[in-house]
Structures are given as structure tokens and as C-alpha cells.
Image (cartoon, rainbow over all chains, first blue to last red):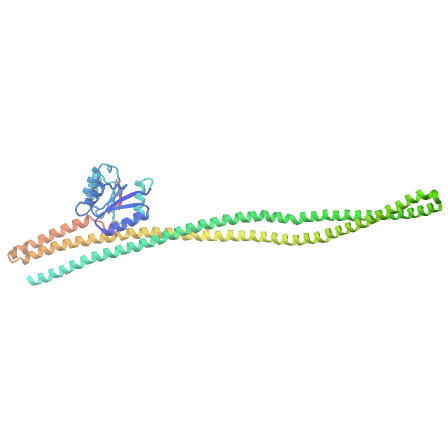
Length: 124
Length: 312
């Protein structure tokens, strides 16, 4: 059965690009335009196998979202990747402390992303 | 100066509007490209599925031909052996014909014997008449012998005719049938050989198309990889969008600071004195913010550049 990836980004281009890349690689995709909408989906039944989130977003940014998502039951061990233009080490450390699994800089190559996800999700 | 500043700020507003338009246009263009790329991928996927299906069908057809040719080869082998078998049967038939010929010769001998019997009976009849009444019984025997001889002779003639007819039938009828069958069997054997040749040609053709399919499938795989790369590169539109938005933010702050000079209630000289400090602060904030973001290959090629992928 295909694994599900949730993508969180305020850019519709990013959502569209990631959605198509992931679907071509054989994943199902759930989208959210910011951290708040993503939290709502997680709290109302969405059960992705992996989450990819932007950092700089309106309403709820990626760092806050990572911390809150880790607090939800059922998502303590779900891989969460940050995908951003942010390159500051302090932001990376903060994300890591809150439970992020990895940090990727935009733009990310479709093949690289697929490879990373398959390493994090054995059987994908 | 107030008018000059106002004119300058109007230019800035226009530029800001254009930058906003650029963001919208590039976003729209990027999403259109993504849609095209996706259609390209779907076409490549359809082609790959079609090639897989065709390859399977060719494989099934090949198996079917191989099975048919194997069966026909067995038939061909059997047919190849038939003329020899029929030749053998022909020899048996010829042996029968020879036997018939021998029987025919035997009937000739029977005819000879019955003729001699007839002559003997005739002589006996003559002698019996010379003997008068004493030879009457002998005459009866002689007459009976003559009748038996005649009957034997008639039977011998009839048998000879029958045997001759049988000989003709066997010699002429069966031999021509066997000859004709041999000719037809040779043609069928030739057909089996042609079918074997067809199988060889099919094998060659199948191998040729298998090679072609492999090349096309490889090209298709490369195409899919390039599609994945292109989708990744399209993300650069978002990187550019963020860069432009940071520029718009710093421009707005600068313009706000400059508007302070136009405030009729403000102290012109104090504003002018503070302006460089304000602008310097705006510049520092902007450069600090810019350093937080890596948005080009050029930036990430440096020695201290951050890792593009870091797993914790």
C-alpha cells in the first residue's frame, strides 16, 4: 500500500511541485497551506507516514508546527522534514530540539527527496 | 526637496507594484510548467505501460508459435518417415502380386491336368466301346471322368481370370495411389520445413524488437528522471518569490523612513540627522535576514555554505 506524505507550505508552487514529485515516486499526498491548517488535519484524522514542512509561514510557522505535531499522540515518531530557504544553524538546532528528523534546503531535487523518504520509510 | 521626494516615492510604489506582479506571473508560469511536466510524465508512463503490454503479447505469441511449430515438426518427422513405410508396404504388395502370379501358374497346371484327364477319359471310352457289354461300366466311369475334367478346367479358367484381375488392381490401382500420396506427403514435409524457417525468422524479429524495446524503456526511464529534476528546479520560483518579498519589505521600510521627512509636523533637521542612522539600521536588518537564507547554487558553492541536506 502506498505511503502518505503531508506537505506544508504557504507557496502554492511548492505544494504543486512537491505533490507531483511525490506522486510520481508513488506516494499519496496530503497538503496544507500553513502550520495551523496542518495541525487541524492531524487532529481530525489525517495520518501521514511522513511530514515535510516549510519554516516561514503565516498563522503558524514550521518550528512551532514541529513542536506541536510531536505533542500529538500518534506522531511522536513520525519523520518530520523541514524544507526551507533558511540556512541559519540556530534555526536548525531549534528544529532538531523540537523533534525534526532532517533539514533540507530549497530547491530539493525530486530524486534526492524520494531517496531520503524511502530511507526513512522502509517498504515505501 | 519635498516634491523630489514625493516623486521618488511614487516611483518606488510603482516598482513595488511591478514586483508584486512579477511574483504573481512567475507563480502562474511555474504552475503551468508543472502541469505540462506532469502531462509529459503521464505520456511517458502510458508509453512504458504500452511497451510492457506489447512485450508480453509478443512473448505469448512467440510461445504459441513455438508450440505450434514443435507439434508440426513432430508431424513433419512422421510424414518424413511415411514414404519409406509406404515403400515397404509397396514391396509387401508386390510380394502379394508375385504370389498371385504363382497361383495363376498353378491354375495353368490344373488346366493341363484336366486336359490330360479328358484325353484319358476319351481313350477309356473308346476302349470301353470296343469291349462291348463288358466295358459298359467302364464307359460310365470314363464319362464321369470326362465331366470332372471339364469342370476342373472351367474352374481353373475362372480362377485364372480372377487372379489376373486382382493382380491388375493391386499393381495399377494401389501403386498409383501410393505414388500420388508420396508426392503429397513430400509437399507437406516441405511445408513443415517452411514453418520451422518461419519460427527462426520470428525469433530473429522478436530479438530485434526486444532490443528496441529495451532502448526505448531506458530512454523513458531517463525521461522520468529528468522530469523529477525539472519538478525540483521549479521550486526555485518560491526561492525567488521570498527573495523579492524581502526586497519589498526593506524598500517599504526605507520609504517609510523617507516619508518621515515629508511630515509637515516633523522637525526637518532632526529627521535629516536621524535618517542615516535609520537607513543604516534598515540595511543591517536586511543583510542579516539575507544571510539567513541560502537561495542560489552560487551561494551554496562556498566553503562555509550550509549543507543542502542534513539528517538529524
